[in-house]
View 1: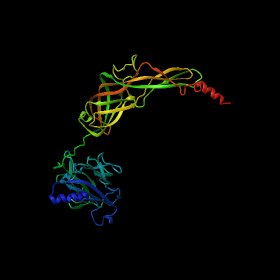
View 2 (view 1 turned 90 degrees about the vertical axis):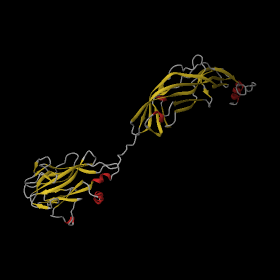
View 3 (view 1 turned 90 degrees about the horizontal axis):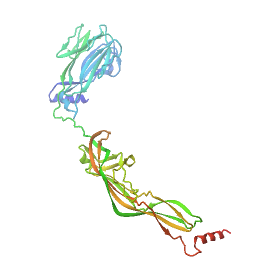
Length: 442
């Protein structure tokens, strides 16, 4: 129906060359099937009919008396009907013969139907003689300017073996012998008793008029993968003057013997450390391709903060290069216009312990002071822009600064004596409490 509507519109506007868009076949066991109701049974316009030994049509039906061929057409102007595309047309028709049943078509061709020829056999497009099934094959492609379309497809019937090699500018693609029912051609308007031949003529596909070629959608960066992280220069650091105390209380007030134990020091709950990566330019400024408004950022190997354990004098061990590891890698989602790649704040974790000895009835605080410091290191890395299908579409060098805040512990721990609860008076001493406890057991 689409083909017919386009064809009528084109003819009303003034005929141009016609393009073949499809062939169709029907078969019957009668001279004219009652199902056809006196009408041409195929899609499109009549081309020919003939009497085969037997045949299978476009719809898979088999018949042995009447085989009917039709063709559908559109005007050349239809090539402008599809926005951004070319109209699908028949670019070639072939007849392929064999000495077996159900002859197949070459790769790239669709089989429209096949039939068994009569006594003198058939000659196909390859000029091969065969005596069994002859297949009608069509190739359908979009009518781009580098291709040709079939502009004429006609038949010729004869009362003898002769059929012309050309017919009104069209070239013969093959011919075959029919049975006693003969054959009819819509082009010559005559019915004959022996051979029938098919012909095609081709024209160059027309160029589109005022139809722009589709513009491919540019690839968009959805993820930035950052690797080859490399520090530039030495790490810079300084003390901030901020001090945090890490401590632990040991209690042997109620003990009967000397207490020797190792304690772990913990800092105030409000003490935190932080680290961040800041780029010298935003990701949108770093790449030439477009980036999503929100883009993922992934660093497989991240920097490890400076060693905060302190030296002999409690110094900051940040004079060399920072190490990297997978455990400090980062994955984040940021705006493409931001320069802040990643930042993190964590509760201060103090890895400091001390061994103490307490006599019975004693209580003590063990502590060390933590001195705050800041650090900063410049870096460069390779950033890869990755689209939604995982393809790297652009790579570039990026630069930035890794910096943070930490604390370093003094090299020594100190102690401070604390009073035991209710220490005043013998009655309330640890020994007195123990004696009272023994009396209460009687």
